[in-house]
Image 1 (cartoon, rainbow, N blue to C red):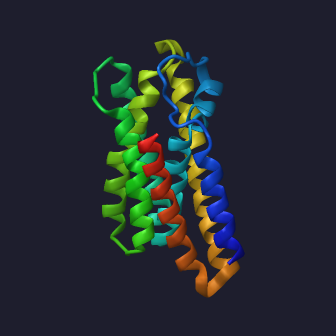
Image 2 (image 1 turned 180 degrees about the horizontal axis):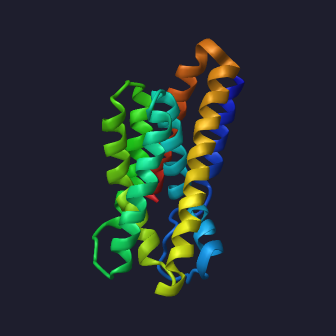
Length: 196
């Protein structure tokens, strides 16, 4: 019960943060530090990237590392496209939609083949990566910037995995239910972001 209260409190606290990471008015710094900080700049990115780790741990087996790896790889592809100046409509809607979808999938608690989970998060990662690429510094700093946001993203996935495994060990028989309730809280947070 304490774990459920903690997860719900965290979800409420996150909803009080600024709604979107990408306002289009704040310039980002250069290189590795800018890349490391970019995914941490908005609750939409934080929720989605942590949720990918939770989903990977919930699925278990090969999904534990393949699902986060698929997200990071496709995010880099999306960043490369975003840096070209290509106009992708509704990027923010795709990012918030990823929060809602990931939350719903976690709340559903269904097992799926790791390939299906990797495909789903890979498609969602394109939106996150596109936003990173569209706000990238000059081409000379792009490699270090991309390395920064890839590292930060992988760390957030790792946090989601560690959180899920800790909850599963802490409350044992109630662990799967607590994780599913947490997924519902993530989906509700995404809906709140959408409404905001």
